[in-house]
Image (cartoon, rainbow, N blue to C red; front, side):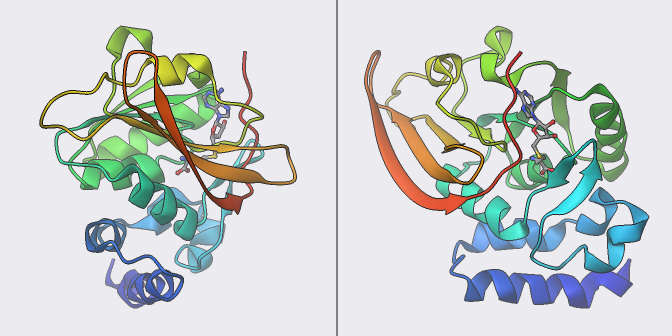
Length: 214
Ligand code: SAH
């Protein structure tokens, strides 16, 4: 797969130029064959910093967006991370590459079947489930981090509640979620600081495919 090495190295440089400075995140992206996550027809563009179609009107997120959300999540090795919106599996692979235990929910069955096979082929251990991710994954909660890769109008209560309570010696659990209408969503980081308390920070604006409940 050497033919993509150059393009991948260029993508890392582009991400640096756009302000991504977290070396662990850049190394994870540098290690992942993004061309495997897109259809053959899009392979020539696999290392451009753009979102690409993956079928069923869904997209693999732009690498900058993946990097941005992953930096905000600040994954530590061994952490339990829930992703909502498995899609192509690329973001899940980034999390796995960073040493997280990854759980991911997708609402489109055919997409998930294809993605499960790909992640297995590439050796990424990701536990996936077909369903509505706005409900989280109650049986496996709590999580050290939750990342939502589709945009909705508000923050699903179940996701907040499935963040782990503050624990001595560990970073507080956090939820990274884009919130807004279809024209654009603000990236939020919601950190659980107590049984009923959360802190919210607001970051840049993005445009995701819709987070669909039910
Ligand atoms: N993380 C993905 C991004 C895929 S786009 C990647 O790296 O490729 C977002 C995905 O979220 C789509 O596949 C869409 O079907 C899914 N999605 C939207 N709403 C959802 C919901 N409520 N529960 C689970 N998945 C959802």
